[in-house]
Each structure stands twice: as C-alpha cells, then as structure tokens.
Length: 560
Image (cartoon, rainbow, N blue to C red; front, top):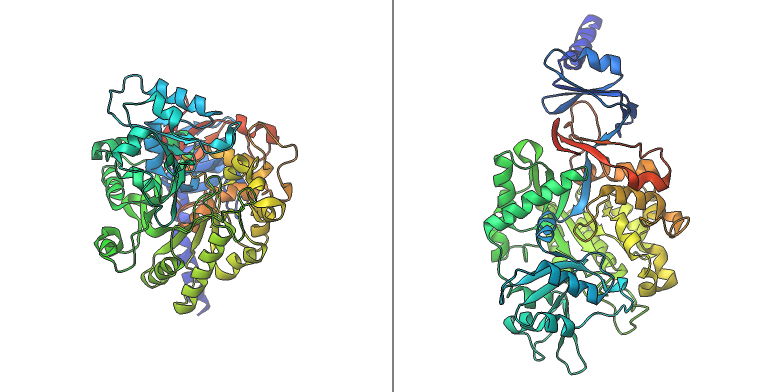
C-alpha cells in the first residue's frame, strides 16, 4: 500500500515536471516581473508556450527551456506586469468617440463650439455633427449651457454633443427640430428636459430624456461599427490593456465582436455585459440571442465572455442625476433620478441567479446604491446562491451603514479611481461635507474584506490605466494636486492598486483560473513598462510608458 501511495503521488506530479521541461516559444529574461502570484511574487524571467505561461523564475532556469527556435527577449531591466484589465469600460463608445468631436478637457462653452467648428469644416449642410466630452464643471460658470450659441454657430446642421459621463447631452435647435422636441414635450420617466424660463427645452437632456434626441440621429452602418470597434481595440492595446469588462452592449454589437474573434482579429479579452434586455420574460428579452444561449465563457480561445447583464439604477453625480437619500447640497429641490424601478432590478437579479448570469448594476448615489443592495438581498433570499459575484458598477457615494453590506452579501464594488480625481473639485459641493466621507471610499470598502476591480469607464475618462494606478495610490490628479491627496485615508497601496487592475477584475469576471496573474498555465497576457511602477516615486508614475503589450504570447502593440 505504501508503494501504491508513492506511485500515485509521483504520477500526479509527473505532468508538472514534464510541462516545466517543455520547450518554450518565447522567453523573456533580465526583467523585473511582478507576477501578482503569491507563490512567486517577483521574478526575472518568463517563458511562454502555446499562448500560456510555461514558467516564471530565474534567468538561468528560463534559458534551459529555450532551443534554437525559441524567441528570446532581453528586457534589459524593464518591468513586466500581468495584462491590465479595465473592469468597467465602453469599447464601442471609445471607438465612436475616436471618430467624433473630442470635447474632453474643454474649459469653456466657447471652446466647445470652437472644437466643433474645427472638426466639421468639411461637413455639408444638413449632415449630423456628433461629439462627446464636455463638462460644465470645468467652466467658469458651472451651470448647464443652453443651445443658443451652438444653434447660432450651426443653423443648418443638427449637432448633438454628449456630456463626458454619457448621462446628458446638448442638442442645438436643428437637432431638436428634427427630433420633434418642443415645449410641449414631457419629461420621460427616469429623464429630465432642462428648460428655459419660457418652458422651452434649453438644449440639455438628462439620462433617459436623451432618447428623445437620440431617436432622430441616424444609425451607424455595420461597417462603421466594425471600424470603430477595431480602432478602440488598437487604442486599448496602446495603453497596455489586454482585457476589458464591456459595460453594456446590444446583441448586434456583440455579434460583430464574435465575427472579429472568429476571424482572429480581436486583440482583446472582452467580458461583455448585455445591456438591460427589458423585463424578464418580455418579448424583447425572449428574442435576445445571448440570453437564449445562456452564459458563455472563454469563447474563441478566451477572447469573449457573455455571461453578465448590465442594469441601471440612477444617473450621474456631475449632471445631478445620481439618486440621493437627501437632496443635493447645491440644488435642494433635486434628489436625482431613478432610471429603473427597484422591482425591475429585483426581477432580473432573481432571474439571473436561476440562470447562471451575473448582474452588474450602475449605481452612483447613496439612494441608488441602497436600492441595488436591497434588490440583491431580496433576490438572494428568494434564490440563495453561493459565489454569485453580483456587482455594483461605480458604488460612488455610499451611506456608511451600506458599506459593510457589500461583504455581507458577497457583492463586488466595481469602481473607477479616476472618477475621484476628476470629480473631487466639485463633488463635495454636490453632497456636502458629511456624505462626501462615504464617496469614492476605497479603503473603507477594502477594510470589510471585499475586492475592488478598477476601471476607467472610458470614454468617460481617459483609457490610460496608469492614471488609474496613480489615482488609486495618491488620490491626486495628474498635476499631483492636492498635496497629500484628497481624503488620503481612502488610498490603496501599490500592491492593491496592481491587483485591482489584474487579478481582481479576473475574479470579478469568473476568470481567475486563466487570467489576472503570471502563473504557469494561465494565458500569457502581460505588459512591458519602461519604469518600475511599484518602486518609483509617486510623481514619476505618469511618466511611465508602455513598451509593448502581449496577449496569449502574441505582441499586439509595440512602442515606436
């Protein structure tokens, strides 16, 4: 019996021994490799075979795995980290933004109009002009603009400019005319038409009111959408992204993702969330091909997952659409908007628990977050499920009593560090000095035992994940303001920040067995950086550059 036990133990070990001695396709040596694997946190060399990590360890050991056909790269001291995953992004939104007027960072309404003029010099009368990125909080006047100046500048072209957060838009008179919107148009449920003193629309449409204008905007062709997706993937790779969690896409867009992945033209690992399909059991939901197929994981050699549903509780803080438990400090007549009924959230949570889907709900205000947590708690009582990994997307302003509920319910707060650095100059004015202490509260949540997968919400924020890392560890903007950080007690450590961009998104997407760390057997997704972000001073983090990005051992980006 003793001999049989020894035999079975050796037999179980044998594959690991054989695998370790298999010849590598790719070997990297002389690097500073942060694996995000506690078994071997730091190494100097990495070997890859068949698109997966074969070995992590010393230079001498890795060289043993090379032969004449192995590609050997000398890193010359450069830093390697696991492939970066943006845990909340909008891939097609990024692609569309790259093809439209970029208004991000504009410091006045006049600058917005100037940028639109510069972009549209060759646009013919009657053609639509689209843009995104304005934020009135960056202007001297913090009030929403009205359409007048935009309408004077473009009397013959319909113009629609989406706010940076995607939760409001500005339309000129021509666009409103074509959309048949007038003073008689009523606010839709979950939306708000900003109005002039006369009652006429001012040009700004918040949350679900945006659809009143959107219905008139011509739909892009399938070829346009495909082009935009490919542009967004290339832009993501350029910044070191090997994966995204795509926060709400329709079936047509996902179908194009599948076409590209089948053809081997999809250089990204995309964890896709289905946009709100309508009521469970409704004709729209029953027609959705991805709901009918059920949860799908690691399709096309791990390039596509379709196993989550994206819902929406409320709006955004910048446009005062986030649902608050008490009125806005700077607008006492307004407590924000609910864009979904609580019953809708509960119904989908119960349906998803029974069908194996994950539910991820946009919630920004403290009322929005409480409603989502209540919906999840109710669904879990009705359909108790272990390891459901339901998520709250943003979890931006939390009541103190709701912070422990994430860990208690097994809910993941998916958060965006650069939202904090973008919002910090005006957020306290929105919610006041008490509620702000539950806002962007990373440390308070981490201390309860949850993980925080980090994202950017691009194109709301910039794609660059080093901005995420810098914000997480400093709570400062790119100019390193304010000194010491904004509410610095909520900072992450550098180890936590790196995990929040690698292994924690993998966990949040049920992918931790194949992604998120440089562990033998996992996909060989990694990024080469020109500086050691785990050791350099805070002020040098944003000077770091991506040297190359690799997915499955294939280089998908190289800096010139």
